[in-house]
Image (tube, rainbow, N blue to C red; front, side, top):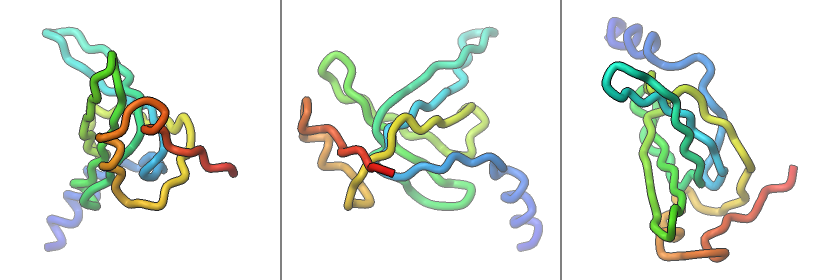
Length: 114
């Protein structure tokens, strides 16, 4: 059991980003195309955070050309370069799956004033 604990501690990132559900984030993802690598940004609203520890993931949703796009990112993945918080959202739910049925301004999350 101790060996498993040391393995998982070694794989967890030290500079884990601090964000919550409802925040608008910009995720920089490393993409491999053949032998080349590049960094692609994916910006959207965090609608869910799942699991915990080494297997923790978060789901980001955005709308492009009228079509909703969702991507699930593992927090501890080596392909996730960084996660920047663009704006903080004020929500009262742990999961924001209701945003999938909304379009336009109705799909917005209010900003949290700090």
